[in-house]
Image 1 (tube, protein in one colour):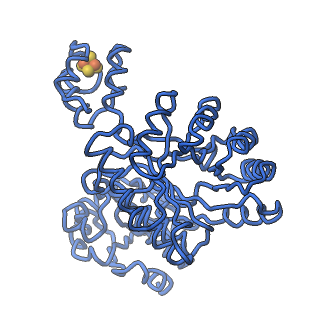
Image 2: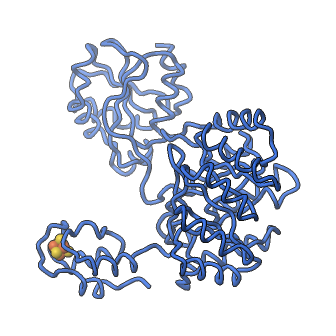
Image 3: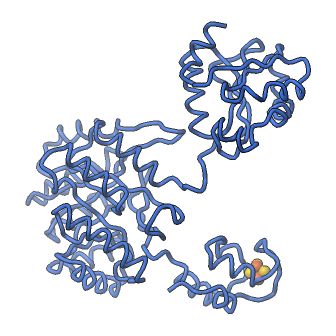
Length: 445
Ligand code: SF4
């Protein structure tokens, strides 16, 4: 259970030294209780108090690290049932299923194709993280495919087998990639638990019911395992969704630590065709899978799923922004046009993309508007004429160009007079309202 501010205060040094950035230990305790401060900000907490506080402040759903390298990722760590209550932290991870009887040449081709599935969006690289290698009864082949995936691709792995010996062989081939072992069942819990403990690997747990999961996780945590992933075993969509909601509610609302782990789902085993599989996968991005395993990775399904994931796992209280400053689009010179807009990330990427498409090199000034788009920023007084003029003066653009023309967004046309007043001698030109019209506008000048 989470500690109250007063309970936390009793564990702090009470010296009011202010090194944590607030005037008193009591204020720090209150901030810690409400999630506004990090325990590490106080350097004087005793080891004993730290252990107590860390246990109490651990998220109700454990954060589990999977994999190594550039596609290493975390799952779980969530603290709220609904995104609007705060935010969701660790995006749902996507895995493509690969049968262990696939010939090496086909595995190579598949990995190459899957690795190319990467999408740039608002400055982020969106891509799948995992390959789930499924044992087909030949432990040598299972280990060989696991080794091939681990050694020849960026992907991290889920090793899927019911046979402890086959799993041990695959682990020996790819443990350096920190694979997720799938899955310990009532029949294999001892052997799989031992393997996970020995190699310090995350372990998935599969049962026929949520009660069955509680028994298994209780046993495994007693063995010292903390990084667990849950599969309640349901493969019928309605039951599976109910299980996902029940797991999330049990950990967040009832404080059930035995179920406080991220969940894995298999739309690949729930749908008759790939379209339906993608729809089901989309449902689990919002409710509430940590890992979604797909029968294949293809751009038609993956791209919309990636965008959904990006939207669901973006902090609703913090607009995505880019840094205020001067951005060069192409190779602008002293005669190139100067445009200004706000620092909302989507605005920046759309505007800069359209300028790039125009093939007219330009200077793009990005003014801090607290992450608001042009019209909203203008309405909120964050993109006023005075501010824009003052920003242009201090931006340093005057040292880079020898003309005095500034192009402002069409939606901010009403600030022209104020900008002119702030920038005497400058010509303020109103650009198009929609970024899509920028190429035509720039080329016609
Ligand atoms: Fe208290 Fe620690 Fe903050 Fe100092 S740094 S005021 S001891 S909580």
